[in-house]
Amino acid sequence: MNTSTPMTTITLAAGAVLTVLGIAGYALSGAASLTALIPALVGVLLAICGVLARQEKLRRHAIHAALAVALLGALGSLMNVVKIGQVFAGTAQRPTAIVVSTIMFLILAAYLAVGVRSFVAARRGVVAS
Image (cartoon, rainbow, N blue to C red; front, side, top):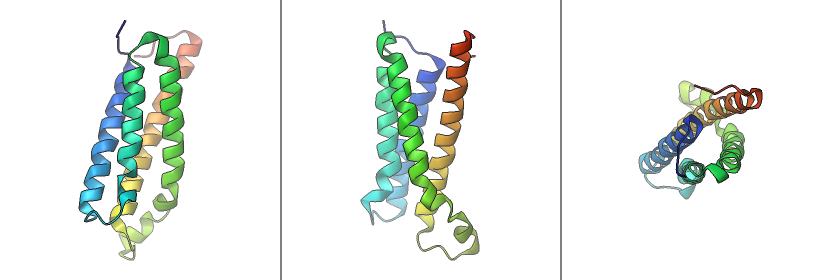
């Protein structure tokens, strides 16, 4: 059966937003570095997990995999996120990378929070709304 749950939908949406963010960041940076596409890579991986999660027998594993990808992506983006003050001070060497990394971090942190909340609710037997 091919059904969707709120977590599946959120995973697909986060994947889509990160993919667009990565492509936009790459374009805004003048296509100077392939590393600008990292948010897009994370987004594609999340989208793949979201598509797999539409299958009931794969849902649990796919969402767990998506949350693992999100955790790694959030941790990986931290090295630029800590430089956000440089953007505001006007001293950042790569302001686009810092801003894109910060947006990616915020999206992934929110996704992780929703995912953990969903798992806690499922564990308690409560249907997440």
